[in-house]
Length: 223
Ligand code: B1M
Image (cartoon, rainbow, N blue to C red):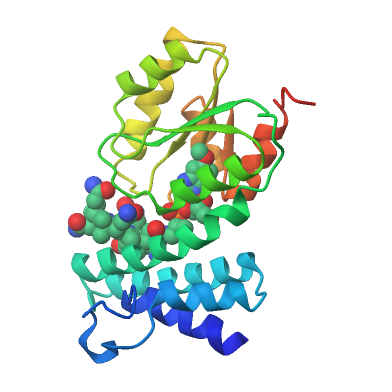
């Protein structure tokens, strides 16, 4: 069983999406993250364990990237391999209650294209019974404001992965609070800290999807 998880981790690290993918050349013809995840789930493996293996693979490719051992294309392939896994895991995160607990508007802030973590938070929130409006990546403050206008009872989630885009996150928080002081804002992403979140005026900070859902639970309208 753990051998299968190791293989999935390796596929993420190497950016091996599926059997027909010619990349990376040395793994040509072998199962990728797509097929291996399917096998793992069919054999009763815990989706959370699969996810953890993926995160380990991501961490490894990230470390290689930091050491200049791999470059952007390799990172992109790793993200693609992770997306293939997420497509299989999504239903497992979507078995929450039928009645929505409320609306959760989420997006990665302007200038930032990282969406894997944001998608995870989005999926887990959806699975916990929230009606999720995912605005995608590189979301300008105006798009958040427009969405809030149409969903004034929502909670907003902002994600940032770059130290540089934390500044855009702070601006987004300020613009939302200026126009809609009552809107609750949750922030998260690797460079964030509780302290930074407080300084930018956010209502909450979550370091992972579970803590994001715990924050949302305080505003559950279905209970
Ligand atoms: Co980028 N990248 N990247 N990248 N990338 C990082 C983030 C980096 C740390 C790599 C490194 O140098 N070691 C570094 C940032 C350094 C910094 O600013 N401190 C970096 C860089 C520099 C860049 C570029 C500038 C590279 C370049 O072009 N020179 C460029 C920027 C592009 C842009 O955004 N404008 C870039 C591009 C890319 C790709 C497009 C190639 C790709 C993204 C593909 C995609 O997302 N679709 C990519 C990737 C894959 C990474 C790494 C390897 C992995 C990120 C990831 O998905 N992690 C990353 C290194 C690393 O983290 N090891 C790196 C897995 C994910 C599950 O974790 O997103 O942290 P994470 O999400 C977590 C939590 O943070 C939390 O929950 C998630 C699950 O636990 N969370 C929230 C996230 N959002 C939340 C919101 C919440 C609550 C919790 O509430 C609302």
